[in-house]
Amino acid sequence: MPTLFTKIINGDLPGRIVWSDERVAAFLTIAPLTAGHTLVVPREEIDEWTDLPADLLGHVMTVSHTIGAALKKAYSAPRVGLVVAGFEVPHAHVHVFPAWEMADFDFARVDPDVPAERLDDDLKKIEAALGR
Image 1 (cartoon, rainbow, N blue to C red):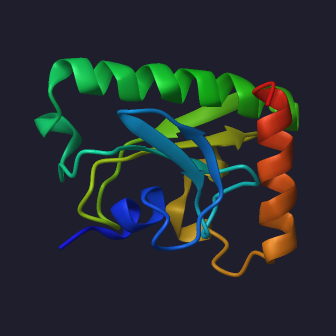
Image 2 (cartoon, one colour):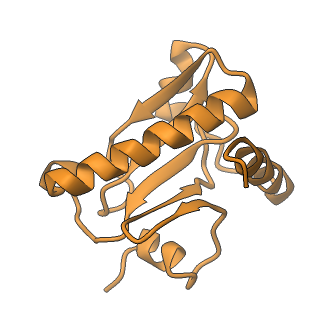
Image 3 (cartoon, rainbow, N blue to C red):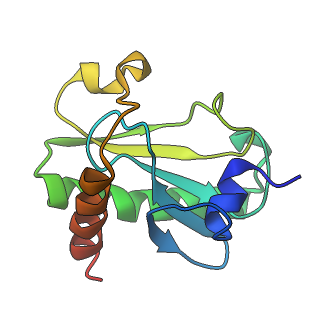
């Protein structure tokens, strides 16, 4: 059975996709730590990041780096956070988000009720920073 992330990547569920290639997709989370919080996800359904083949993990991190640079630019953030947690969905993923302070890394502070309009604005900002 496909994971929630696979359904988003395949277009079976709605998602605000900021990056898509043959191996990886990146999309905004609906429960962000900060505005622009993006998940970088391999298309291949592998539960734990430590089980990803090295070349795929390398590609995930390269895309995360590109997304991180775009987030820093789009939000004028002093830092960009990168977290691999993996408890929410059994499909490896990297959280990439603009950060202004250590409290921005506290997953107890996610916003589960972000208006769709703000997510749409975040998508536009990130796309512009990526040059799309």
